[in-house]
Length: 289
Ligand SMILES: Cc1ncc(COP(=O)(O)O)c(C=O)c1O
Image (cartoon, rainbow, N blue to C red):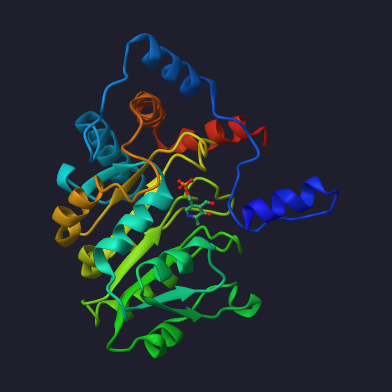
C-alpha cells in the first residue's frame, strides 16, 4: 500500500497515504549522536535475542513513569520494530481457524498478519458518529467461542482516534468476562498525541494478564528506519515469545546494538526530564508550538 502511494506520488498524483505512519520531523540529534558514539565504542556484536538487560530496565522505568504499570525483565522482549512484535505475538498465539477481532479502520498489516497465521480476521466497524471507536456492545456481540485475540490501536492509524480511560474501562469490563481472549494493544503512536493523556488498556488489573503491549521509538522519535521497539506481553506468553524472537522467519534478525545505545539515551533523557517536560521537548523536535 505504501509502495503504491509512493508510486502514485512520483507520477504527480495528489495522494494522502493512510498506510504506514511516517513522522514529519527527523530523529533528534541526541539520538543520532548516541548512535555515532556507539559505532566508535565498537558496539557491534550480536545482541541478546530478547534485548539487553539495561535497555529492559529503562523500558520498565518508562512504563512505570508514563503508564503506571509494573513489569519485570522477563515480560519484555525487544525487537526490530512494532511490526515484528505484532507478528511475533500473533504467530505465538494464533492457530488456523482462530478469530481475530479488528476494530476498523485499522492499520493495513493487522489483517495481513492474521492471514499469515491462517486465522480469520473479523472487522468490527466504527464510524465518525462514535469518533471511530467501537463500543462495548459491539465488542460483546463480535465475540464467539473461536475468538482468540482482539487488536486495539490508540492513538490510531489511520483515523487518529484516541480511547479515553472511561472508554477503555468499559471495553475491559467486557474482556474480563472472556479471559481466554488476548488483547494486542498497539501503542506505537503514544507520543503522537496532541489531545490529552495516553491511556493503555493494560492499566486495568482485571485484564492485565491478557494484554500484550507493543510500543517503541519509531514514531515518537522519528526512527522508522532504525528498526527498534519494545514489546511487553502477558506473563503466560513469555517463554514461547522469547523463543519465537530468534526464529528466522522474522523480517530482520535481532535488535540493532546501535539502536540499543540510542534508545538508552532516549529513555534516560525522558526519565531525567520527567513527564511534565516530555511534551515541550517533543514539540521542539517537531517544530510545533
Ligand atoms: C499502527 C501501526 N503499528 C505499527 C506500525 C509499525 O511500526 P514499526 O515501524 O515500529 O514496525 C505502524 C507503521 O506505520 C503503524 O501504523
